[in-house]
Image (cartoon, rainbow, N blue to C red; front, top):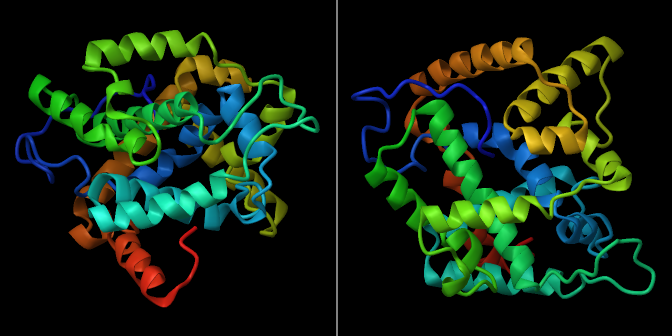
Length: 292
């Protein structure tokens, strides 16, 4: 979920969402397509990358438990954007419990020190999630007008502030955010170790999944196209993922097909699985099951 070079969808009057409608409605399902790209963006900051890669929280490792990690991430998105105060508090406690175990020590191979409670690292993650929302809207709806863009930016703040980031750390407006983003890009670096960790995620290679070799190759080629298409060029270069005009055309054609299919789906399918995650969160709280 990132700002990329994808050709934007034309702005359509009377589209599924309609001008000025909530960007979440009808786009949550297709947002899953950009999930691997957003993970790469987040982990491109070394403190986040090594924090995730060296995490002591076994159940939260994306390389070993991708489906469970995806549920946690998407529940966080649902809670941050639509959750009640009670749901946010419950999920914050669960995430903090896991984050308490994520910090660098003398055994860490990270080039930088890290701590999951670091507000700057959390701000970066929130910024990547916001960027991803912009890109999904641009791909499947079209360019935002100024009013919609400002509203979306304000709505993006909880993606960072639902955990430890104070509101005053969220850049004051979109211009301030762009300055923050450009400055943060100077700190982005994916080394060989993190790149090796991220490549199976980019290709959507699920641990333990077996399929015939030719199907595996086609599956991974398709997902590498999708993931690379949603990445800005800086992150493609860091991941050493090739991209050219031919790749761009293939990506644009695929997104056009998916956009048409998404527009034809009933609302509850376009919002799946996010429309169920908050209910699942309440069920887990009620039954005492782990939230993450």
